[in-house]
Length: 240
Image (cartoon, rainbow, N blue to C red):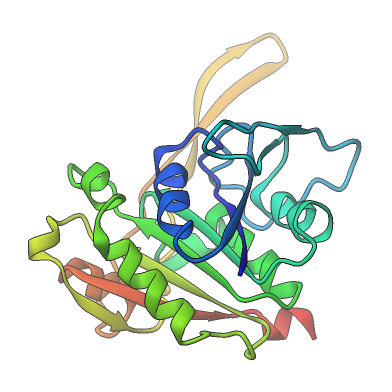
């Protein structure tokens, strides 16, 4: 199996490196990831100007490329140029959950949207921020998720969909089982806040939070109960 690995936190992110170690047990892995943090870029692609690609291999990681572009751009380059016989696209492990309205902004999920639009099965893995992040990304939980996804050949024939996994901030011993659920509908409430202004220039930053969705049965609801959530995202209508 040939697996394309990407993320939105950048090629040096610890979540990406941990996921590559897990994926090596399942086949040939080619890492194609942004050169810098591209969180919040959604499914945007670089469609204007040149795209810079640099081989960033090491002794333990021969097929590793950094791209001055978005995660979705990395997927397109990977699938069509760097790993043309790709069987599966995996994105993550994201530092922070991707639940509810984050689907609109997440580069981690944007990479999977691009893969789904190209007819490839894809899986996004995100881990809630907290004191357990470093422990969880190397835990057997990740391997178990990959085994289940790959053994079931999940969404291989169901084109126009991808799977989004969210892992709660909890010690592995306190973690509950996999919960199949729908994606929540809460949205991020970011507001522009003026930081500085000089002459004709102004500098803003976005400050906000994602309200908790209390509706039972959603990914946000189950994540609060310390379940690992599994949600199938459909983009079929977008590709009609």
